[in-house]
Amino acid sequence: MTTEQTEQTEHKVDTTQSVETNVKTPSEYNNNSVRKAGRTLLVKSASNHTIDPIIFDYLEGLITRSETKSTNTYFLTFDNVSNAAKAFNKFRIDSTIRVKFSYYRIFFTIDGLTESTDYNQVKKEFIEYVDKKTDSSVLYCKFYRKNNKFIGCGDFTIDTLTGMNTLLAKNSSNKEYSFGSFKGIFYRYNGKRLSPSE
Image (cartoon, rainbow, N blue to C red):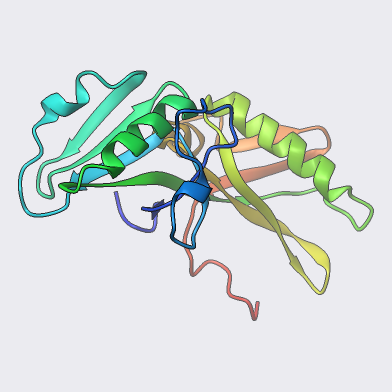
């Protein structure tokens, strides 16, 4: 997995998605960046020591764990945001471990947008479509504009690798999508795909 495929943050958690009150909120952290909590965590050692994977055995709601042996890094996916946030807060107090939320960014095209399109309504329908198809959550989404007009593409961030792979698999019917009067194609995000001058 490359850094292009993930956006990660180390410090604050936006726990607005029904996270229990015993989980820290963003105001309890003193750094400036606040990001939404997702279902996937990236966990690694704060030094070059090996993490004993037994520490993951009793995490509530952990559904998958994968290890990158060369970097002693683990990706942990949970059944819901609340359990991911609890694990995040548990690891944050351990000075021997670094923890981040792992996000997966996807580029998309979209046909059917006009000047009269209700941006908020289409964005809501698009997010609902992706959430349902992937069993994941869209954390951020934007439709690109130029000179205040839609240009037929955008990007979004999803909270599980499985969700991203569901949309991008070459042999999948999910790579091309349609809902209502809109249709398009999902692509692996490439930061060079669109520059501000284009």
